[in-house]
Length: 161
Image (cartoon, rainbow, N blue to C red; front, side, top):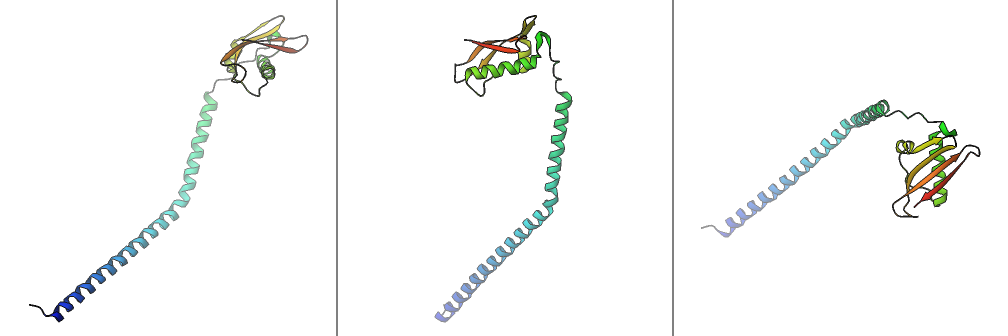
């Protein structure tokens, strides 16, 4: 059997041992935190120049995609000058006139390639029979007819609902 003094001695030794173990654990955790921070700092220092590398690589990819787009894009169709006005000029003037009639700044018209197929020319001028989509004046699409008059150099647009 152990005396009271021996029991206190053993308890004190175990408490001191537990304190020493906790202190050692804190020291090891502190060293690990220092090592992790040093690794982060070193990685950031090494990554500096490669950020420029990524930027340069992105620039090269963008330039390549732009070059491919420019090389393979469809060439613009030659502008038809029959009827006294270029088809592209008729399209722009008709769009402007229709937007004025609608009282809007923007509306949806057919793509230029589709619009060019909707244009007819004769000796009296040129006519574009197409469609316009406007959300505020009518719902959905409305057909229109736009006529160019060469003697007066004017366009006359009419919305057909």
